[in-house]
Length: 189
Length: 441
Image 1 (tube, rainbow over the protein chains, first blue to last red):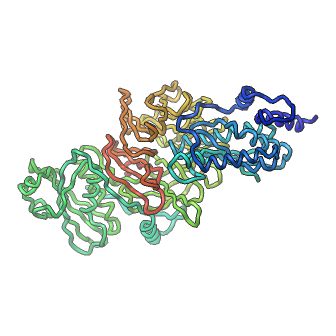
Image 2: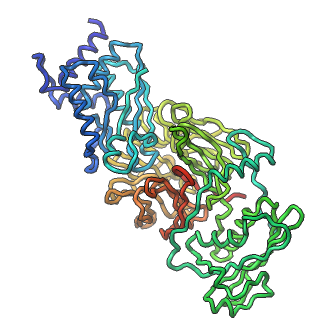
Image 3: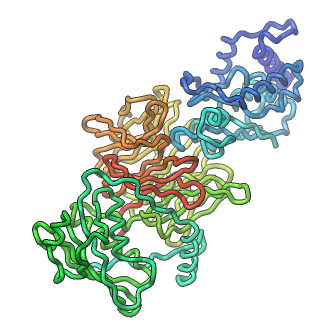
C-alpha cells in the first residue's frame, strides 16, 4: 500500500468515525473522544463556546437541513463536496461535529487529486476588533487546514487567508447574520 | 509671529500632480468624499464663549467663513458652548469696540472678535480674545495665509484660542485618516482618506477593491502605515503622504497586520503569523529586521507602544478570550491588565501614558472603555453598542472611534472622559478605522 493509499484509507476510517452512528459497513467506528484526540493532534485550538454563539437563524437551519440531506445520500462523495462553507461559534476555531464528515470528503478528494489546490478563506462576524478578528479568521482557516492535512490532503495543496470581519456573507447586525459570517470557505482552483 | 500652515500639497492616489491641477482634483474629491459633521451633544459643563462674526473687507472667497469655522471647532470639543450670533447685543470686530457689560449680561466668560481682509493673493485675520469678567485681553494676533487656504487659517486661530483657554494645545489643525467603503457596480470600493478633523477637505490616498485596514500615523505626521489586501493577502505598507510613494514593509506568509508606529518613528509593532500563529513583532522600517515580542500559542495581536517607547500593550487570548496585557519593556514578562468582562481588545495608550483606551464587551455590546493604569479603575465611555478602533487626539482631550448608526458605520468623537461631542457619518457608504494624526509642525 503506498503512502497515498494509506492516507486515503486513514481518512476513510476517520470519516466513518465522524459519521459514527450512520456507519453500516461493519468497520469499527471511532468514538468522539478519539476524534477529539486526532483533532488536537492536528493542533486545532479548542475553546469553550460563548453563550451567544449558538445558531438561531432559520436560514442557517435550512442550510444545515440541506447539508444533512446531502450527507444522507449514502456518503455520495460528490454531493458531500458540494458543501464548501463551514461555520463556527463566536470566538472559537473549533470545527463543529457536523462539519467533519464533509471536510473529510474534501480531504479525500484532495488526496486523490494531487493537482487540485484549495484556498481556505477564514472569516468572522463583525463583533469585536478588526485586528483580533483577522487573527481569529486565520485560526479558523488553519484549523480547517490541519483537519484536511490530517485526513490526507497535502500541505502544499492548501493556501489560507483570513479576511477577519471584512467580507461578510450576510449583512446585518443580528445573530442570524453573525452565524452565517463566522465561517471558513473552501475555494477550489 | 508664527504664520499658519502653508497650502497642503494634494495628491491623487499615488500619482503626483502639478499643484494647480492637484488642487482642482482635491476640490472635486472633497465634494464627493466628505464626511458630514453632526454635533450630537455638548458636555454638561461647557464654558460659554462668544465668537463674534468677524468683519470682512476686500474680495474674499465665498463659503469658508473664518469665525463660523472657529465657533464650530470650539463647539465640537464639547468643552465650549458658543453663543448664537442672533443673541448678541453688538457685533464688535476689534477690541476698541467691546463693551464688556454687554457680554457679562449674556453670561459669557470669553469673547473672540476679529476681522478678515484680502491682501493681494493672501488673506489676513486680526483677532483678539478677552476674558469678560477680568476685562483682560488674552490674545491679540494677526495671521495670514493664501486665499485658497482659509480653513487652515481658521483652524490655526482655533488652536491658539483653545490653548489660551485650556492650557493644552488645540488639535484643530491635525488630520484624520480613515477608510470608507461604498458599493460601486455591486463591488465594494475601499478608500483610504485623509481629512481635517471636522471631516472637511477629504482626499483619497489609496483606492482598492480589497480591504484596507488599520491606518496609523508616523510620529512626524508625514507617513501612514496600513494593511492592504490588494494582492489578495494582507500586507503592511508604509505610505509617504506628500509624494504618494509607498512600499510593502511586511509581506510574510500568513498575517501581516496591526501596525503601530514607535514614538521614535523608526519601527512598527506588527502582527505576523509566520511562526504558525499570530505574534507581535517589532519591525525596523529601514533594515526590515524583526524582533519577536510575544511567544504564545494563543492569538497575540494589536501591539500598541507606550508613549515612552519602552513598553507596549497587546491583545492575547491566552486566558481563553481576548484580554489586554502590558509588557513594561520589550523583554519584560507580560502582565494581564483587563479583568472586567470576557472581551477586552484593541488597546491604545493616552499620550501621557496614564490611561489605556480599549474595546470592552459588556452585556453583549461593545463599548470603548478606559482604564487609569495606576489604580486599575475602569470606566465605560460610550453608550453606543458596536464600538471599536479608538484613536486618541494628540492632546489627550478627545478620542475618535468607529460605531454604528442604523446600518451605517460612522465615526464619533467624544471628549476623553466620555461626553459625547460629534459624529461624522460618511456622505455615502461606511466610514471606519479612524486614526488621529499627531500635531503637525
